[in-house]
Every structure is written in structure tokens, then in C-alpha cells.
Length: 455
Image (cartoon, rainbow, N blue to C red; front, top):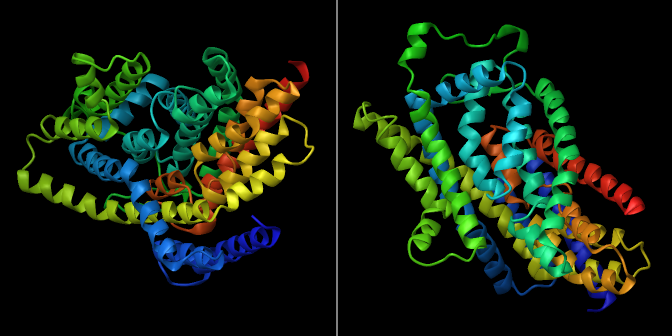
């Protein structure tokens, strides 16, 4: 690739992203249209064939939704059943009794921190979103702070701790012991989770939003609302705690079982059956069926179907925007701008620990996928680090940390977190999730630099 073609790609990327921001902030066009239009502009400006641009957009859209599109739809339907049955309220009430008041963010961050080790963070957030919403409605705490706490716990361990595919692949590329890599990543993950949780509490006070009674989001003055207090009769009318939590816990257990059996290479007989049940789409379908025949069995069939139909309508916007974000990422990937920048950095004389970190950071920002960013950085830098005699575990984790940088429009999890939290304003979306992931990125890298001094 010539320098002139590389410069052309960088200019096209800058123009495309600037156009995207302008459309989202200054026009009346829907964000879905803005994402697709910007993807087309970037592809054409970078010299891609128009046919290839169309192919990349459809492949990116389909590829993203093939992994989480169905899960989003099923998860939102499940959430609606939790709400209409009172199970969400029961779960929130049970959490408050167990852990006490004013610890909601800590509990959700810890939940995300643990759950996301074996389960993809998108699936986990969708499954746990009804619980977050219920706690917000019950306590009148802002959904913003609660969602950030949960999502940050999820994404940090998803990024740093095997057996999630990204860090597992990085450990394999660098040829390090998985156990050591896991323990080191786990230790690094603690502090950024705590810092992000503190940020969640502060931002929740600045962006005060709670679920309204009609299903819409409302922003009352904090002093005008007070926590919901259930009467004894109202509490008894709620579903039992066991039935309420069962559709939430069942898919988590099945997905964890899938990961364990797969890692142990137990793929035949009964194990193969449970691996099938533990696929996220199947697991959440089972949870939805379970909720239908336990939580709302006494509700009129017409009412249940109407609620589920209504939930599908709200899922449509989330699915379209998430898919469009995938299209933007695929266009940037197909144009090759990420590899161009990574190759340039690899040819420099940067300190060895910085190399995988910076490459992963730039690729993450350019094309959106944290997993792709860390694996690409690992593939480029592992031979360089080995030849230089660098610490392979810390270098691998540097690639993982770099992939946390500034999640924005081309990252599917950006849309999942913001849309399920009712955040539609672009500036607020950046504060809610882009800033959060950047905090995790910065804190984790500072930890790595300190470790590199002493190890």
C-alpha cells in the first residue's frame, strides 16, 4: 500500500466520522440513516468499488445481528414479561432486602464482573437489563448509574479475563499460560471496575432518568420522587422469588455449562445436548418459554400476546441501529485503514509494552470491535515482543486493555447499553458509555505500566 493511498484512507475516515457526528447532532435524520450514510461515504471516499461498499454494508449488518439480533428481540420480550407479571419488582425487592439500600451500583457491578467471565457481555446485559430497570423503578435511582455499573463490570472482565474468546485468543497468540493470564487479568480488572462504578454514581446524579409507569422514560426532579414502598398485601401479590429469578438464572447457568463443556472438549452424547441448550439464543428462548408458563400463566392470553407484540416494536429500533453500527465497522475494516495504521506503528521504536496497547487502541477506535482489536494487535506484535524479550503476559494484556478505548457508534455494545437504558441524545450516549470505557482503558493501562516496572 502506497503512502498516498494510506493518507486517502485516513482523510476519508475523518470526513466520514465528522459527517456522522454532524448528522446525529444537527439534523432530524434517525441515527440508523446517519450510520448507513456515513458508511457509504467512507467506503466511496476510500476508493472502494460501489458494489463492494454495498456488500460490506450488508455483510456488516448481517454479521453483527447474526450474533445478537435474535438475542435482543428475545431479551426485550422476556423483560416485558418480567414487568407485566411483577417478577421484576419481586427481584428488585429481594435484592434490596439482601444487600440493603444504597449499594445497588456495587451489587450490579459485582454481578457484571462475575457473569461476563463465561458469557458475552451483550447477552449478559440484555438478560440482566430487566433487573436493572426494576431496581431503578423501585429505588428511584437513575437507570444511568445502574446501567453503567452493570455494563462496566461486564465489559471489563469480558475484555481481560479468559475464557471469553478475545483474551483467550490473545493468550494463545502470545503463547502464555492461560491460568497465569487469567489471574493477572482478573487482578487488573478490579480497580477499573471500582473507578467506573464511582463514575456511574456521579453521572447517575447528573443524568437523572427513571422508568415511567407507561413504559416510557421520565426525568423528574430527584427531590420530587421517593422510593416505592410496597404494602404487605401488594408484596404478597407478587410472584414468589424462586419463580421470579428462575427465567433470569436459567439462561446464565445454561450458557456457563456450555462454556465449561466446550472448554473440556466434551462434545458428544448428553454433553452435546447441553452445549446446544447453552447457546445464548436457545438459552434465552428457554427462559422466555419458562416465564410464559410460570410468571404470566394466569394472565389473559390476549394481554400477554399484546405485550410481547408491543415489545417487538421497541426491539426493532435497537436491532436496526445495532446492525448499522456493524455496517460502519465492516466498511472501515474492508477498506484496510486499521491494518495500515497498525503496520506503521509496528515499524516504530516505541517501548515494547506500548506497541500492542497503541495498536489495539487505534484499531478499536477505527472499526469498533474490541475482540478484533485485541486479536489483531496480538497477531502483529507477538513476534516483535518475543524477539525483544518482553514480558509476554503483560504485552498480551496490553492488547486487551487497548481494546477498551472509547466505545462509540461502530460498537454494538454502545447501542445495546444506551438504548436499553433509554438514552437517545448523542452527547449523553458518549458520557454514558464512551467515557466509561475510556476510564477503564486508562486505569487498566496505568496498572500495566506499574506492573511492567516491577515484573
